Image 1 (cartoon, rainbow, N blue to C red):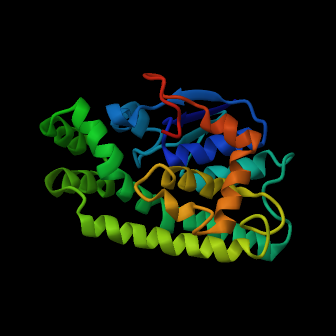
Image 2: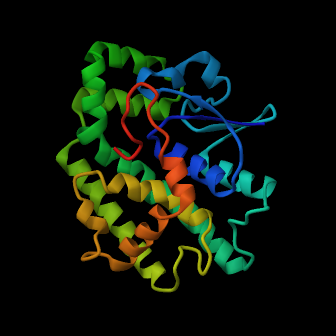
Length: 249
């Protein structure tokens, strides 16, 4: 039995759900509401000491980190192949898995803060309640970032810096897609799954023109083909159990 602990709009959770969908695997959903700080609760941090989502439990064997989960699912359920046979293409796939974290994840997080995350938290909790929750977070990397953002926010310079890094990443995507339809060559792979949630988030941030046909035609074409896949539609149709909000918004 595969059990996925995830949050509906978490980009890393979306990676895992899309991989499960592309492989046609059955799984049990355990929704962890990170905006209720459920990921800081002892029952969850026992599974995931980093206090982040997603976490995969496969018959009692627990894995964390979305890119590791993707490769685990590929190794364990290879009937639908999502990793190239060619060694160079496989290395390119792993480069984009890495890029999804180094270049995409933390920068979309920064650009999401003022527009999305801070507003949502301020509607639910006082600043004192948010600070108390940050104090409970066992992961100092996340706790210190949360505290700093509560104290001084995300500045215009920080946001601009993050958008510049996303621009650079998207330029690399545009160049790579000139070589073929997909990020690791001729076939759809884990590379495309890892990057799909990042484009999904960029599209609803302040600068969606970054992935427009006028700006980056090959990225825009890739994004349209990603959204047409049944695996994408299945993975991204998961809704917040507390509202009717679709994943994308």
